[in-house]
Amino acid sequence: MIKVHLNRWATGCWRGACAALVVVVSLTGAVVPVQADSYSAYVGAHVTAAGLTATFFWNTGQEKFHIDTAWKAYLFQQRNKTPAVPRVGQAAINGDFPTSFLGTGHEGVLTFHFVDTTTELLADGPSVDEVVYEWDTDPTDFAISWSPLGSSTDAMSDFPLAFIPPGPYPYEPIIKATPYYQGNPVVILGVDDENVAVGVATALVPEPASWIYCVTCAVALIGCRRKLFVWRSGGR
Image 1 (cartoon, rainbow, N blue to C red):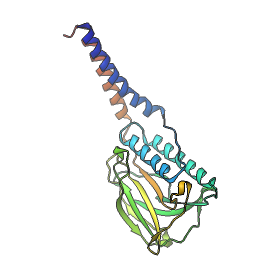
Image 2 (cartoon, one colour):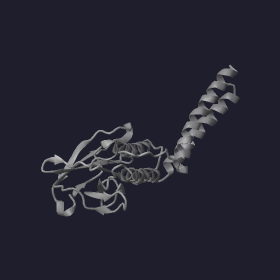
Image 3 (cartoon, rainbow, N blue to C red):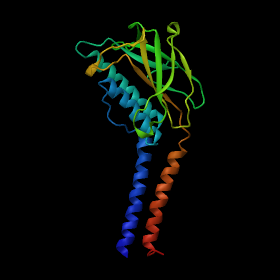
Image 4 (cartoon, rainbow, N blue to C red):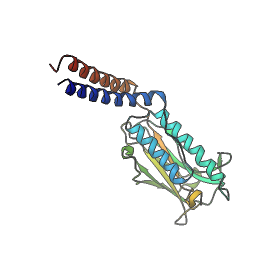
């Protein structure tokens, strides 16, 4: 009987510890290593960050840090490729990239740019006459499933397209921008011969107050304490 109660108590504490770990990771800013040498790895960094935020393991500050770090690593690898890749394509949200804070229900404007991999500033690039935008609005499965969002042929205004994040928090859309010229995708071969003319950005939705994490921690501690009480009282 005592062994049964000990097992139950241990199980309760383990569950509590797992829940508390979520809180600790969220509050301490712990992040996973970033390796974004290729376009696929860079997109993967967006997916990982958005997924961990959507499942409440990270907050948007950690998500932004992870994606920004991946962006720096991505540019570094492209400019150090042999031969060097001087330009990459990039989507911007309200003029910001690779992330931008945009509240649920608030309209944002997408644009497309080429970025110098050395200066990290906007630069000229290949000819473009249309940009097609796609997005993934549910990162909880840690996988990409692109859906059509829209397109723009307004080259004078950097191919703008208005959109509204579907929400609610924490469903933050990852957006891909593919440039075209005369009906064909623009291609810039980067690391691993992937097309780095295509750009991605993530619309960060400001999270609710940190009471979510407090509630999670409180529930975990209550569960652990209850198991301890049951064990001490002999199961009554």
